[in-house]
Length: 576
Image (tube, rainbow, N blue to C red; front, side, top):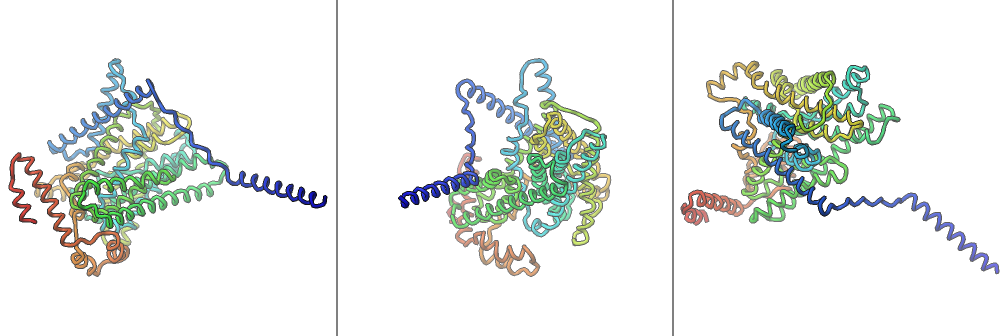
């Protein structure tokens, strides 16, 4: 009897313990809620969606085709004084006005087709632009000046964002302009700090500016876009977490931690992906099948963007660093055919994406409901110009204490004046989830006006400014019959970068790099250890095969052009 009571008591204790354990486990490990399955459109609804998508694709391609013809005419008639972005935006405005007239006459309804979708921008248009920017960097000057570039792009962009955001917040509190809260003000200041100084780069190239200074501006403009996007995402994250009951200092620390996680986490992910691609293409020899080699490069190019976005990091920052690393290491493991193919394909796709964005920027004047407030727009323009000045001038003077190549006041002024706002602020303004709707419309309208102001007035005035402050160089250029060329497409199309076609054998690499005594810091580490590990050192047989491959392709092209034998078989036999 006592044994039965003891057994029952034991069972009760075990049951109680089991129930307690299960309860605690259930509390600690909550089941992950299943993702909702989106309804699949079928029947008439699917057909209507397909027709709408087809018309959107047709409209986008039509606009892009007209813009390409416009850029060709600019190059054909040597209108080098006009940046292509100015011409394309102006064409977009004219097309938007024409469509508006057609809709007013009830001849057609293209409202849905001319609407710019932010998701399309961030998923399809922006990644090729950012990747191509990183891939086309001259890595030598970039890594030598990484400190100065980082100071301009990270600290400078943060200074500009804080000045614009803080100014808007305090002016709103003083009832001078439309009132925004702190996080919304900082989000707007961050997105409007993304600079697109294409005109500056073109002018620096035409003026034969020191390549180090050229790289300083180019590197700053590339990293600036990514930093601006991360800052905007940081502000959006704070808005979603409802930090109104947290002190200002805690909010600042929370924002700083989020920014550092996004910046360094995304950069590390992109760098790791680039290094993995270098190792894969070094040890898996795809050089004899360029189509497979090119396909693998395209996969690795977009891979970090999808992964970073999937784990809540910045895909733009990841794809930028992936492009820089792949260009520095992976590119030199490719065959000559794929090297040229990568350069030209990336430039073409990036050009089409940029042109599409600028055209839809012009169209957006007529395609979105706007909320315009004169005082808000004027104060925002003043704050944007002031923030850019506080970014450029103090940091340039500070850097001159540590640099052999000084940044002259003339260069500082050009860098400040031609800090154009472009596609990224426009798309980020549409992507902000602000409430109420009138606040979103106000931010969108103001962003479009600032972008158009900088592109049309500052971008269009860059050439007269150069002629005013650069009189002696202008006279020298006229004597040499050299003109400033602001056509990015023409300059990019006329060049194939020699450093991207270099193929060195082991002996040539040692003679060219390892015996140099002036290398220090990262450059020494890269030449001594990283480059030999991640890139292929070619044999004479590899070089011979590459030359045969290029010669064969060239001869086939000549045969097709001339539609007859060109003696290429004899040349190929001699080469063999």
